[in-house]
Image (cartoon, rainbow, N blue to C red; front, side, top):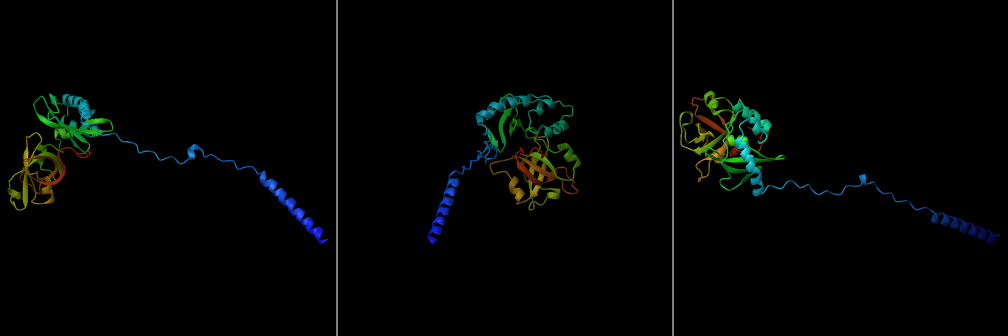
Length: 268
């Protein structure tokens, strides 16, 4: 009886094992699932290259015809497509030319010094007008191409010099000036141990006043031309002293830029 039971159990186990092996052997393989392309992790993309700076030759080829159009424009409407930030320049232009007419200086020579100056987003060359005046003309790189900085060309300031000197307004006013060190101490600025004096000339050379800063101050060191320079173009904030009596003496409060070109066209 014992041997019969043992044999029957062994036979049953072998049958169960055979069934299991058959089932496992016939189990279908799990199909591979492909991830839709839209859900795949995107491959790192190479950085988009920005426009390379213009070479001098490329710049000159684009700048010369632009300068010719700018210097021959006789109406404000003719200038607006040529200048940077025309929405800022237009009200300033109309403040100077209320009838919209401009006396075009014309151009007889371009890049008279045969060199291109670069400063930040600016490139500039010297041009000669029909009046035989030589002065730098600054171009600003914009997404739409080169545009001319009219404010720097014209020496635009926050208010007319005549009005500034006659009204002596309170508060800071921005002016583009030609600065040179001088020794002039008088009235409220008679103490030459406290003050350093500078001559500030308007861009057209018509007006000249005296500006003062505290001697040996940080601002004094910032605006003082180098020993080999007699004068320097600068953009400054000026202010009349309280209860000013002289229309020819002002405080220099801040240097906005060395030169007349400002990166931010929204500011004066």
